[in-house]
Image (cartoon, rainbow, N blue to C red; front, side, top):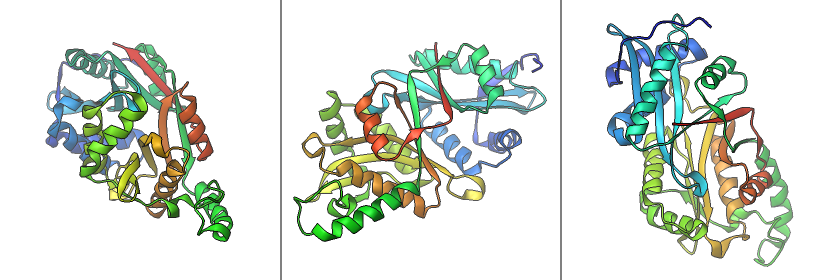
Length: 326
């Protein structure tokens, strides 16, 4: 890949830069992600402390852009990090040069914000971006990316429902065969659920992460394309949750893939089918939206969570998790 000289000017992106961002991304990916970039740019400009969003300009023309989102500890992971969600450069420039300048600007801003770790994840076939990030000091991250097809769990549940009908009236039957999403009410998450979500997470991980869940709830309920986050209840009281999001894709349609950020069950109700009910409802809802798969990323040694997700039909994705210490 031929290097180009550095573009002399970088600045934060604004709403006026949306169309050039979409055009650069479409030229690289082959599809328009207008809905995604509309949501992401609005979220970034509305909440600048949570994002880094920069563009490189040659005179007044956008030559490239980069988006990073500041996170705190999915699934109980301590500390602050940032994820490089999107980087794009006009094809005539290539990644080296403009891409390097953008990445340096992102890192400078993150250091100023006190963030010490930058992560990303790529499809294994994105060899050009993978090569660029490796050249810029990224290496494998101790994380596992898992995915599942939204159609698979539906068949499992249909089989379970046939078995459960025999003993449906008895709560002491074989709970593994009972249709958990019928026994345990699951509803769409609301803003008022935040305090209980924080309490459930603290009971599992030992600390209260108010800022993390406030940010994540805002992102999943108000900044994503469709509300798909869920809460499980017992007697009207929240006992578990899943936070997930679906962005808009081409022409405003729901994207083909959903992202699940975190899941939690009150310790007093674990091994009672709550996690199964939440996942069953999430998959059913995603399927009705014609979303084809759901993806998540967790620590490689979180064996309990990996075991739960494996039982729910998740398997390793063809994506590579990366990180770079700043």
